[in-house]
Image (cartoon, rainbow, N blue to C red; front, side, top):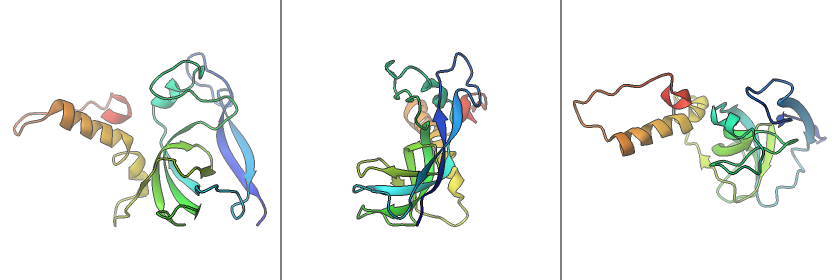
Length: 171
């Protein structure tokens, strides 16, 4: 097979305030050969759902500034939570066609990920759209659930107030 286009959201500059389309992030196109791209023991995935979360803005900074998540590298795709489908795999526990959630996925059409890359295999359930794995069943939903159970420790009969103005988690 010949190489095909592999479009991605390329981090172009550190914003001063809000990110500016086609300035902070640009559309970049590379190529990838889906049949012969070296996997080096890892997997080749196709991005299906990308989670556009508020924390992406925090990562648009000088990468030398330390924080809970690394800063983006100029000239590389931005990244975040995603649902992907495996195209090819050299991992024993992952096969082509599997759906995975990734806590860190380049925002591009296809990515080769190393064998140590973190992922969770999605167990498909009838009536549960894959898109829920970057929302209710993904980081926002899990953050809200863990915060409620671990910090809030609700007791039967209590009233819980959920604010939709609290970013991805509260919505």
